[in-house]
Length: 264
Image (tube, rainbow, N blue to C red; front, side, top):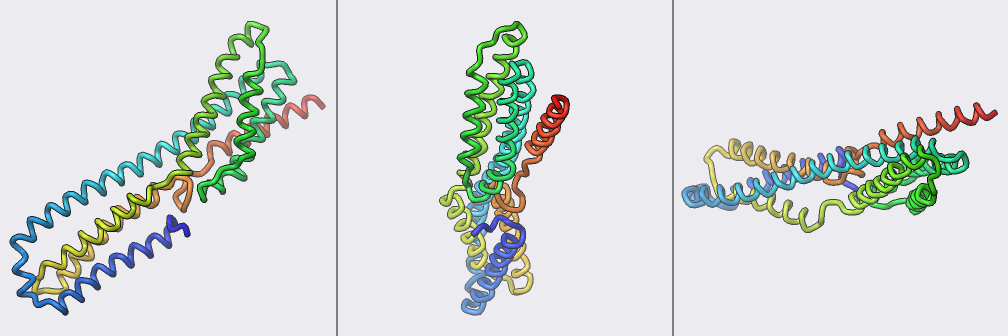
């Protein structure tokens, strides 16, 4: 089940905050406040250590997740740019070679946008799109430039199609590998420890302590929410959309349609 959507994630983390407050109430019903107040002097120092360690860990994970999301967005844009470069540079090739490359470019971007993008929500990829990318690479490489113009364009086209493959591989690798389970276990257990540590302290104003405990748990839940939503760039409600590739598709269709009308 995917929980990286707004409704499910907010529901889960709201329940977590509620449980932290309920746990405090249960502890106060079982333990006398005088016993809890004896822990203040030593427990305050220990809570500072525990809280600082978890804050550093959580902060690093949040930054890593957001950086991962931005990196994935950059990779998609670079893949789109490389594909457009191959399409445009093929205009310097012989007509039959040009048509095959243009059709492969259009077929590839169509397969990625319409078929592979929804599959990445489950960490899958399209074998057909991968084959079409290989075919495009071979179509560009298997060419012997003759004219000076072709000799100048050929290495640029080869570099562009290789960059396309590298960015495609990077994109699919990110979709395959989300946040490790071990990392989530550490984050959730750390959140539970920090919330439970508040139970060792007692204020005579129980309502005030409940509010403070709820606020601390909410802050932790908000950071975990960021990790969840940014840690999986190609799934959930905040996933990266194929807007750059959609622009490529529109341009390719328009240019190929224009060429066909010209030939007619």
